[in-house]
Image (cartoon, rainbow, N blue to C red; front, side):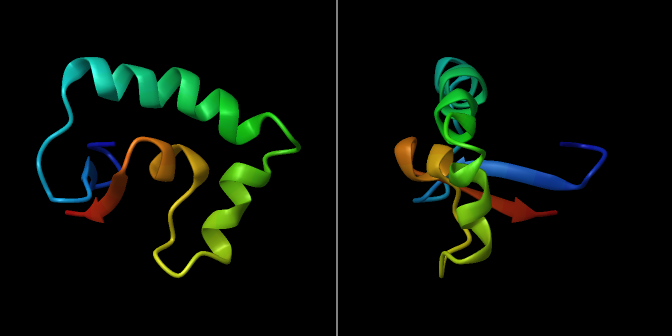
Length: 64
């Protein structure tokens, strides 16, 4: 994420704990990709541009 200049934070702009980041990166990605990557593709139609793993773990991706 450092190379892409993005940061993942909770929806209230607090940092993610190590455990939550790990769960989001493993279980969250698995659930988002479970049915033909629909969970990841919903990024393009969601008003807040959140994927399923963002919604599950109440996270947002910020630039910079």
